[in-house]
Image (cartoon, rainbow, N blue to C red; front, side, top):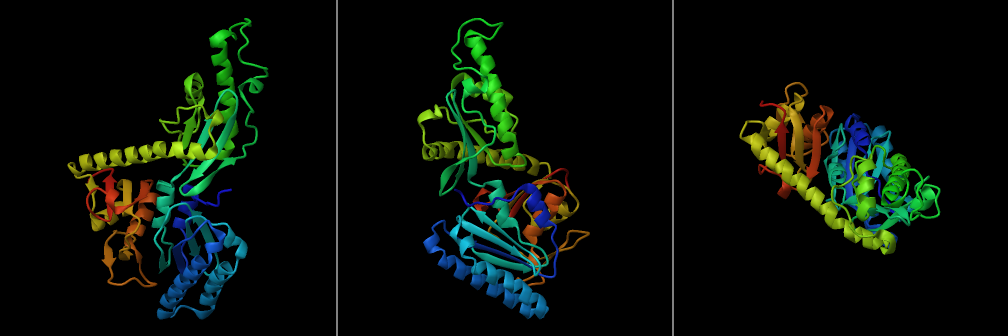
Length: 373
């Protein structure tokens, strides 16, 4: 079983709107090996202590601070919680609430304290989650496999998923060549394949609804083409695994899926870089923080790429988008790049968290604009 909680876009947007007297955002490395979880618990305690010190420095209410720290103490003492981990952990807490997300991505340890959550590292999990579903589809069997980076794959239980093509259409075999209207021979097999594929697609809908996780098809020949023709999931990748999955293990499927997933991510980034460069010549792209903040505030950003590792402390004016930079982060400031991402997302932009090397423009962000500002 995989112990990963990747937030959906609606969940992310809900967290984006949270405001409280204290919002503590902690990110730390974890391990799926239970026996090695002690170091992660200690790291959580150390990061929580840093958050407490920041809040004490600004005279935060002691009673509210005690409630906040109780969340971290309870989490550190929860043996069952630490038994089931992935590669990173996000802990988002206020004195009244606590949210955790177990992530396949390897994130850098950090703590941020403000009146809002620091969510930029979570964008990486949403943007390039290193996770996917593989639909292993053949005439003889079908299964859905979930894969994550550095974690073992697992077969997902899907209610209503047909056993095979023949039983899905009420036949003992699809090789019946006796004529029955047009349902015979190779033409009839195509018709049966479409019936089978529609049943598979319908069974997957409740599992995939609301997700943005890539789906990779492992199938061959006519069945692969037929499934693509009836598929309703918008995140089915163009390139799949062109081998029959009947004798391929889940681990082998995961290994074969990685090139398709990497190629899709690389193609997406390349297309965005090309668009950025084209728009830059029209005055409709910027890597400047001040310009990006104003554009985000006024809803001018179409697509935003942000460096998930950089934190630039400061504050952004709610009305104008002007940035007030500060020298040192504290409980009264926040990450301005994170705030720019929040405003862009609230105004309907596509927002992606990437590594600095993947950013065009040599800044801490790259904004593709709807119009020149």
